[in-house]
Length: 203
Length: 109
Image 1: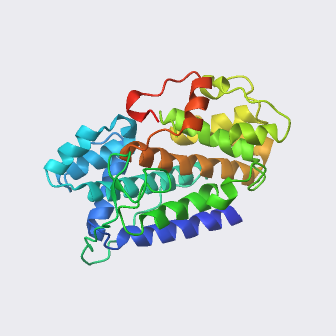
Image 2: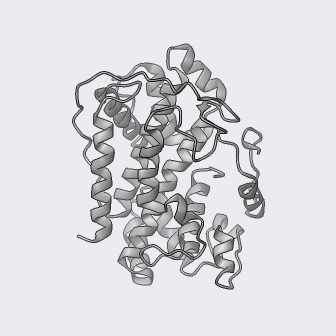
Image 3: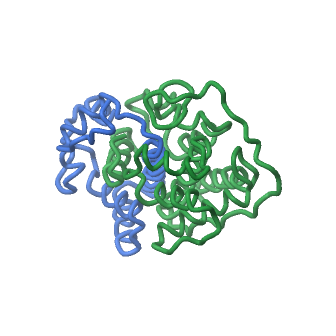
């Protein structure tokens, strides 16, 4: 086992703990169902039917064609009861799951087995400082990579747990000469740019 | 940052090659990195073994692991930013133009 695989295993353990526990808008069981739906979509399978239509659609779209989502989609899901903050939580779950699964594939591993849900009730905590500010959903401050998940308590911490482990910390991102495991910053950024290109994302 | 990091090592970036997928973009081992990233993002079980071996031979095991992990991180970031509609940053827009890409209206900074 290399140190990198140790780091990855520890990351999965932390992320799965959060996935299994009740979140802000979903139970642990619902969060795991969202993750299952994302994997189903990626595999080209039909919806599982475990979730309401809006949650199913949002989970699948974020998993396989996030670049096609537009404000009218989010509004239509909201009309059926999926409030914007809950949609942000789905984005968080699916995006983090995709990172874990892609990393596992790249490391030569199978998709990690999803955790068993932990009983409990979602907190339904609303971040009152969050508002629409240049993005399509509420954020605390202007919509930006650092604020993307600020409408969900703990969302930013979960995002940057992955970001710091797989890529670089915010502090490290300012260093054009930083190396990780022999990868130069230019090689790291080439991997980032190519991934964004393949995902039709301009980030 | 891709360009800045290359300039620090007296190399020039050729952004269009990031898109076109052949030739040297100016980054050492760029072709092998690109092939490994493509295999990971597409979860291509046919291409992955060869891409992985080539990357390991050229860069070493840990570096190949790191490249795969970086791609995985951007799989997350791309989905998050597309899903919540974060406008493209001006610096990114400039690079996109150099790569020959047109930023859609809904993402204009």
